[in-house]
Image 1 (cartoon, rainbow, N blue to C red):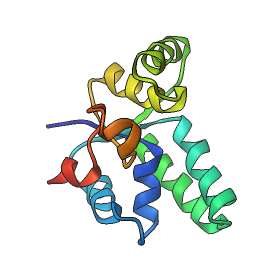
Image 2: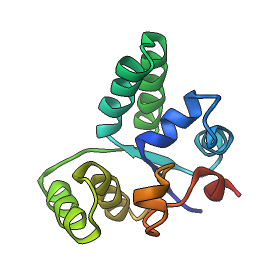
Image 3: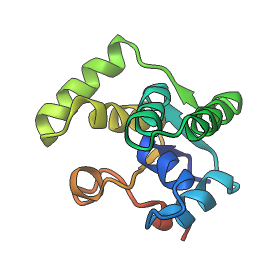
Image 4: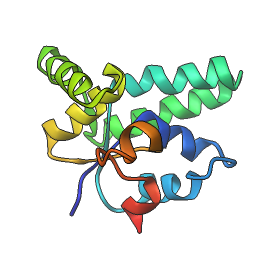
Length: 135
C-alpha cells in the first residue's frame, strides 16, 4: 500500500469543483490508501480560500480537511531537519522552499508526493497528479 503526501493544491482541487483535478483529488482523499500532508497546508489552503476565493466557508471546510488528515495521524510537522532538507531541495531543483518542504516531508515519511503543480513538481518527476495516484 502506498502512502501519499498531498500538497495544498490537492486539498484545494478537492474543494473546487471547477478544478481539472477535482475528481482525482476527491478520490484520493476519500480512498483507502493513507494520505498525509504538511502542517504548512493549514496556512496555504486558508490563504487561498480567504484571499483568492473570498470564501470563509471554504476556508473552514479546507481546514477541516487538513484536520481530518491530522486526526488520522497524517500530519507532518515542520522542524529544523525538514526545513534544512527543503532548503537543499529548493536549491538543487530550483523550487520555492514551500514546494520543497512537501518534497522533503514525503521523503521523510517514505511517501509519494501528489500535487496539481505540473510546472514545478509533476513535470520534474517529484510528484504525481491526483488522477495518477488513484488510477
